[in-house]
Image (cartoon, rainbow, N blue to C red; front, top):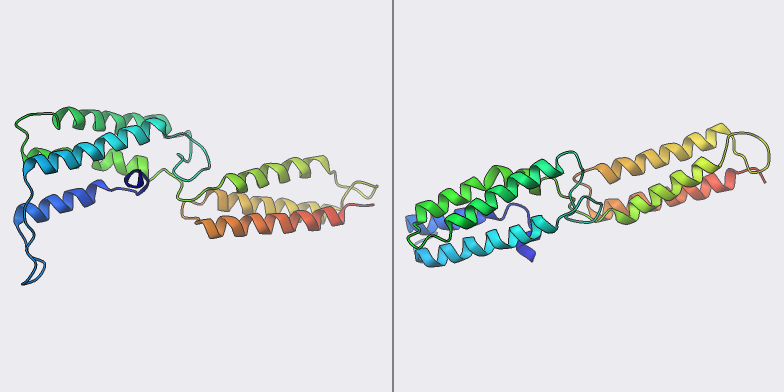
Length: 199
């Protein structure tokens, strides 16, 4: 399952095929021995099968390896599934050749990159929950000087904190540490906002 979660594993497979086909040496002592067609075929079949399972089960959400948005979800998923299904058919050939395996691998390149490049690299569910909760709470507190209200500056500051948290939630490169920091900052901002409510 690890292969499914690492982006763009197919180029590594292709690199292995190319290196082995050319019988290159990494140094004077190490010789890379080419594998037979059946081994390459099996490796590629396993990769394609695992990707089919992964893509079919992938959903739009905020968890790690979830698809980021509904915008390209259907088109990217369909394109990658089409390429994987076609690859699966070719790989079942009894007289399959290494050049055909390399060609199959290349056909997965663009649709695979489009799909895997649209997946979250960290879990943002807790941050999303914090944002939704903060927005809901902020909406219940109106600007004013009466009891239960808050001055405009305090509400503006809290709204800015929510906006910053959203920016982290939507940042493709945000890692787990940054997500946790965003949650902590939003929680601190909410405490300040609650403290500013007229008693």
